[in-house]
Length: 335
Ligand code: HPA
Ligand code: ZN
Image (tube, rainbow, N blue to C red; front, side):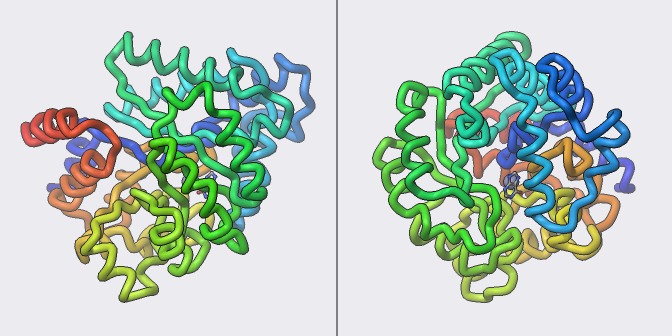
């Protein structure tokens, strides 16, 4: 198959996305519109200037803009619009099931109540479910640059909304904030019946992946590309089949890899790790799920069997029911 044929084929497949920060799907046009609505000053004159600012040196330089961008989100309708716009992209990219991360502390720290964003998210999700059968779960992520105490308070604030939350996650600045800092809150989440994921081995070392596995008892590792530096960890991940939610465009934008042709996702996949492809923060990193597949097709020796495995892995790595997994994998087999 040519690269063009591979792209058309993968675009046509029903897919799953497992690593997506809803705040990272805030497009410049919505940012401008909400700034105007709430009479907020942005340091950008137009959409072009916003896009030009998205040149990052590392994770922290991105996070600074990402948290700033999120400050235009204020009322229930803003969060509805944010979620709705992303779910429309799912429809466009054939993402039939998505597990979306949101960062409560980014909003509660600005005085926005839990119910404001939860109700906005929920309204959009219900509408997409009704209109085209979109399947969607939520992952509440703790900001690791804040204290564990703040994460515990967040978990407590989430009590009235836990029936709408499937898992907890861990994101933000990785270096200096190892998983072990959050052992207690992840234990509490487990006792509440929540699933667990954590960012690890993006900028942080392979040791942080061990920490997430052993201390936080996670079901999946977000990113995890630095696992390659630890042969013992690679052996473990091949055996355990803990999924890695890899984000190619994110990794090149944040200089985890200098160029897409240096990305190790195919290497991880060929070694037998359960790698998946995801967009992370599509508005900031230059593309949604299909664009991430297209980027690896363009720059790596990707073959059809790789794409098939990556997409199957996402279904298997998801928190959807076994019956739904079987149904979708059977459907996929027909493509
Ligand atoms: N890493 C850490 N924190 C994040 C990311 C990421 O890729 N995206 C949004 N918050
Ligand atoms: Zn992420």
